[in-house]
Length: 333
Image 1 (cartoon, rainbow, N blue to C red):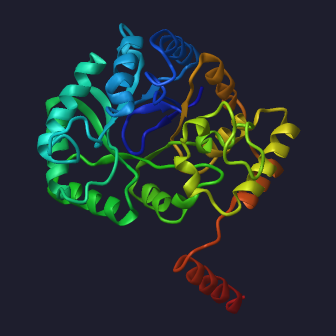
Image 2 (image 1 turned 180 degrees about the vertical axis):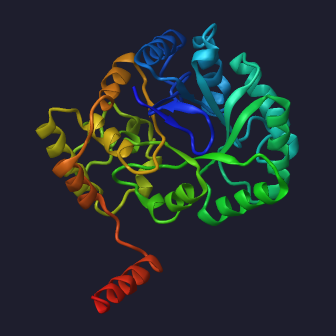
């Protein structure tokens, strides 16, 4: 297992992060413990959950599974979604932040979390109010580092500026959706993260199961998968060339003697600036297969082919400025 530094912080995490969204929903307590045991045995030290996953049950099961092994784990949780019916039971207000961390720590049976994510954008609460509350949690020792997920590029920059100008704890990590069929963050988010020294921990590297080998090009629903439950959230963000990309992935994985899931995860981990990929599993056997994405490199023609087939067309202004740069380079030759 490879360990990578989280942005400009001193924290080091495994390149595979165990996602626990299924804990309490399709994965019971015994299976959850088996999955966590296997993860630790394989060298995974990074675990991701959220207060809203199974209405808090995911945090509870993760905490139980890590009992007595807290020092071996980097634990990340998230908050934003409603955890009650009251007007202050969701969002990024100081009131909700202070209550949310106490509730998460109680469910996890821990004194602190290593990484505390803002799960979604709160368009009503001022960024400074949110950042000051999170800064207080860092100083209180309840949170080691703060992070955000699903932020627009401009909002991420605004938050970083506020933290720097007000001397507040700043985001050390950004968590976006990213896979062979969802590469949008390469255009603005990834350059910001590289410039500002943020770690990047991606969710859905298998595109909601689309890249596991269970789907054929053109299919969006397959019996025995989460699509049976109507869970098609990532698919609305798929690139127009998703089916061509899937076909190439299936061919490439066969040629390499790897499963499609292993190649898809490995492709993500080969991208510059990536810290870790969140990989969920309903069973220990699923995790065992996904662990085959570690210990080798995807390179050469295989990597170049997947990069080329899945590449998104440049958008304005990137497309215009790239064209201008190329014309200028040709003119001075």
